Image (cartoon, rainbow, N blue to C red):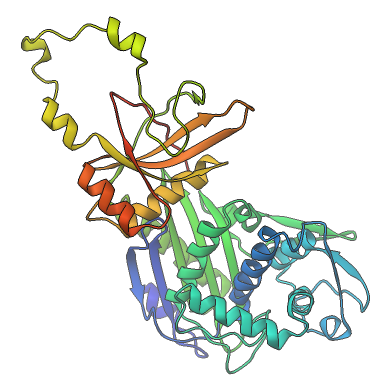
Length: 397
């Protein structure tokens, strides 16, 4: 009944809820129907900004000049004048909170020289991310009959923002942005009203109805909800709350893999490098360690052959941040579920001599054959032999 009430006159209603880690669809209504994205478009504009920053072409302090065309864009906008400057970080916050159209145009022109050329790059990126039914014609989402997208494609874009730019994702949860004496509050009201909500973007033009892409994390799970064609902001938000609640009820962990418990960092002097499996005992320790006697108390210990079958793992990277490593391991679990059966996701800290801490993304508890087959399919992968009991660290979402 709630879905029927949300049907606007201007656009076909669509909604989708997915598990953010696995991409599993938890709910869907018209997920592939093409609609006007409105300011959801700015999620791709932000993706292109983050991409440029990570490539070293821009810093957060880089200044963007406002052109006469950018200054003429209709509201919502900051009201910038021709020739004025704004930093990249200010642009990000203006796009997230105020959904500033003048800033979106200025960004497009700074990157590509013209908004049309920037839109072509946006569409090319959309294709690379698997957004096959999305076409961009401008950077803002202002009305254009050729600018269309779907709920499923916007879910892909939301996941890509989380996966590719975890270090920038926090911008989507900014509640307000102060600029030249004015305070601009985030249009996404769920950030305050829904527990665990931390993004992403609202959108509205008359032809689209009220759109929203929202994400929330609770109890180690994250779900993403998309609504196209809401009848009003309140109705859209009420429906999104219902959809996210439903998502959390049915969401499961990716591939059924477990995440192991926390352990202290291992010094590089006591362990092998990030690319090799670290032995858990030194030669001296091995000589003095007594073998357990066979008795009823040790009957539950797995046999040597049983230990061998699951004494392998794979490593798919080493990262500066724990969350990045966890995400990388989960992506492999999603990509190769048949080879990761009975495995457990592991983030293993490694403290180097210079004090730098790395987080190794691994999946432990698989067979040697599974490890070798997985690394044959993956580009960046190392087989890891697990000698003895290894404790590993988990990263809380």
